[in-house]
Length: 305
Image (tube, rainbow, N blue to C red; front, top):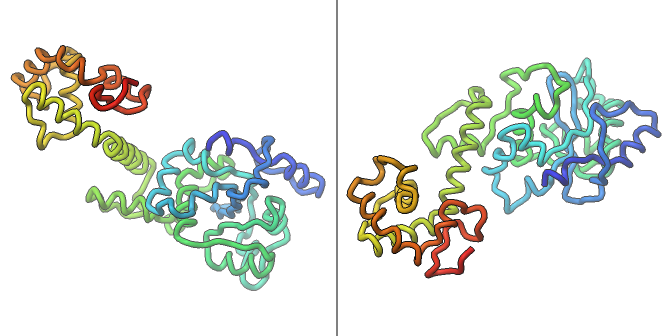
């Protein structure tokens, strides 16, 4: 995804220059994104102006869960894989750039039309949707999923729009429904205005841990069954970390040392039975799971990696 989003549309940039409009705030790189239907235009309001982004439309479309959108904006590098800044302009009076009475100013209208004219555009306010659809005849999208993306861009704004030096006011900070729901699952009642980079990074790392645990859960439980059959050690009630420690104890006891997760008696039995596991468990898969088709391969159940 990141490679696909690393470039902007060169012919659109040429079109803009021919019209005599100002150059975009960052130079586009050659790629014809406008021909890819899954990309959408997004109008993002900053403290001092407006930015136009392209983003992957599948990011906000089912079956993708609304609760997972925030994970794409854990940091700027991750965000750049799903959104691409096309242009940013400052406006001395943003209220005159778009409002119910005067509609959309010529300057902002030109800015919007220059990128993927006629395509659907996501906006961060219902009144913007109404004004742009009426005055510019551009179909707009405003919903909870779009607002998750808006939150994400806000969270990564220094990295996504480095030219924007102004700070967001507290009242302008958006909440992330997905992040708030995730934090509540761990009894972390954090108010939206208290969310910072450290909290987002920690939550993202925790989510990654959950994902890894889910991915390895079944096969690690199978490992626990093998340990019981071979060494007579019941792994019932053990966490995945307990089982992983026991597996490491079989072949690399020195690296484990005296672990509080495995008793001395259990550790001794595992080490003494190490040779018995050779015919049952793929040792290479235990220590290098990413190089194998399965995270932990049981020779008795499947082929070697």
